[in-house]
Image 1 (tube, each protein chain N blue to C red):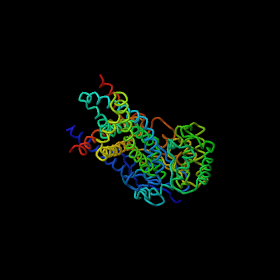
Image 2 (cartoon, rainbow over the protein chains, first blue to last red; image 1 turned 90 degrees about the vertical axis):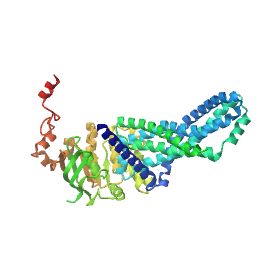
Image 3 (spheres, rainbow over the protein chains, first blue to last red; image 1 turned 90 degrees about the horizontal axis):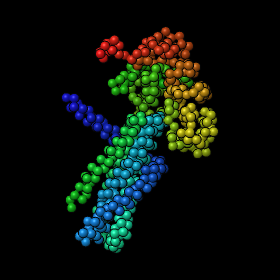
Image 4 (tube, rainbow over the protein chains, first blue to last red; image 1 turned 135 degrees about the horizontal axis):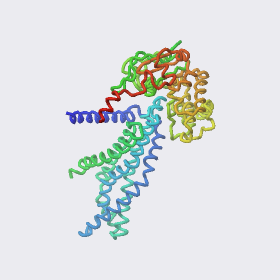
Length: 259
Length: 265
């Protein structure tokens, strides 16, 4: 009986949490949007969550591309198919690794920082004082951060893929001796703009939305103590990583599953 | 005397725990009203109720005769421009300078030119003695200075009502004296109505026009500072004189000690 009550309690808790998260989303993005007033704030946040994540994205992208090329080459060369290295690297990055790894890195680098920042603003009564100054914290604090995440992450994912393809070129062509012309031309023939590039961008937009939403909600909903903020930050990284991986499967099945 | 804020038969509970049961208070216009009581009694909660951040379960809270819990969100935001609150921590925005913190509500709610805002902000900072600290970041301020900067921000839009949440807590005697002086002077000079929530008996009695003592979910004593000092309630006297034992027991409720010790063997 006790465990049954426990299931009920946690289900109710989850439903209430989802409700609060939906309310936050509605209040910050849908109800009374003020794009003009929030524009400078959003630009500032794009700098914080986007531009400051560039280094980790570029370095990771380069290494992932290099590893991909190295692994693929050892398999392909046995069949004399090393010309396929270009599309192999490009498709893996554009369809899967670019959006997914960027989202995971973004959750760890920017998502956790967003949660901690908003949680701390709550703990130090900054959010309450905004409200008492008749300024809606959802519009002033949450909305610019949400937009910044949604705008930044797809761009970061594209940069990640681009750097990865260049990294693959460095290893495959410059080191292992695949022909540069075939690396590029076979890739060009195999990669479709709508099917591959745009689908990757769509994935990335979905991940951006989910990760940033989780991050700002966890901060806004955090228990305003040092322990609560620590917990919320961990939850942001765990929940958004799981959400990204789960959603990636669903999106991949929808986009590429019917071929 | 006209009331700026009045609370009528209000009941409020947080989860299962009742915080207030059927209490009524009146905050007269232009006066300093103090609300005292032991910590954990929900004094800050009362300010949040008046500010409309929380809603009472029953009863009504009126600001200039208009019911706060009954307001739409839009109306509530309009009304909040006429009130302001000094939070215990100051709650300055950490990523802005003191100047920008004070300018924040003005920029947010008016369309004044930057030149005019600069003059206004410097005047507010002058009033709290921090004009020289305008370009400092909140992290560089001492606790007392942060509270004064927050006070400058709270009066930036010339509110009618200002609510002080534990303004004396954790202050050294000098900054305590500064805050007492500021509350008194601002109240007289700007013709404000002030609500001071605190448990620092001496300071509160020196500035308040009227005092409410809260304990055990209700008002246990009220009156002018003189009346409160002579109040016949034992609870009020225990609180004012800081006695360790009285109606509020020294021991947290428990079983008899004998029983508990014997059980261990």
